[in-house]
Image (cartoon, rainbow, N blue to C red; front, top):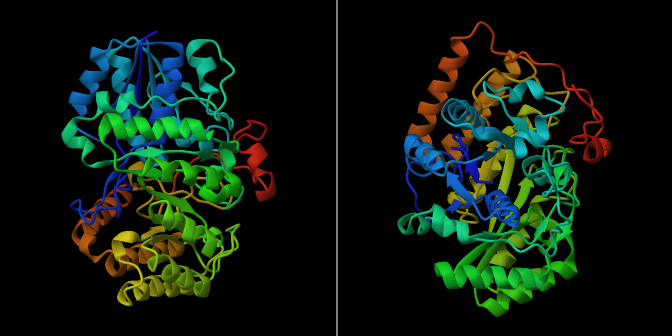
Length: 449
């Protein structure tokens, strides 16, 4: 079987930081989606004829022709929600230009297939792939069989990177590895604990993977893409040993509570230079992890003294936060920039986006490319106006260099809403799923819209 794996063009919430950046600077790099490495590697387990095409580089037609030139029997599209506009375009085009069988999966499908199926409608015949917390589960649909593959011992094949990205492009991408999947926390708005069963990579697998990236591509740094690096301390210690032995700089993401003196000291010793920390919101009850201003600033200073940059992530507009509290948090973000604690290009600050189906969300009828950047949910029109103002505040006060680009995107967004009879998306109500049951029910199909 000849298989092509496609990563569609992401919307305004891109793989670059900050969102809407008009130029690449401050060391910004494009994050390769780890889904591509695993989709390719698993496909290669079943067939020698597998290729990857990333629609975020080059023109649409150039990429489409690359897909067609491979004469695929099957095309696999791994779609995030904010790349689903591109997914629809590619799927329709493929159905018209190729007899290949089409499969569509990824976070957009895993989170929406059962509880918000209307969002996934395509004008092309396809099979939707829901992994149900097993990253290997899609192989049965595509290849007709599923071998007993285990995340811990499965060897990723990164040869696709050299075949997919030209040398001048590889200078702008970030080499990534994932050493664990899943998450032990249960924040209501986050996909990671919902669809990925917790697993940990064998140290030898990581050792070989890093050595390959160093030897083949000259990688001098790697980003550990785990959603929660310190999920299991013994595992984190083993991974840091491997990275230290490889002599490679690295970055990771974790939770504030895990940045103890001991962990930060060890991170510095092993070459860690930055860590993404999900603060999200200091007062929300939607977050299953402790975050406090005092401990955050203490950790900032302790890490900085050891050469480690903490890159905080914030969310405004969470469903249980009032407007004034959100304004206060944006003011706080502005203060840590002005005090020199964190440069703005190390900050993520976004409006709440309902990637996880929630019965409380009322969606706006706008294209997916706006998800992650503009408000896509509100209780009523007044609530929408408040959320829009929060976006204005974020981009004006946190990312002022994107002001012109933001105004362009904002004008396009408002124009789309103005041209519709109603701003609200019509879709079947999402069944209420208690937070404590979401992990078991969200993608199991036991609860459906």
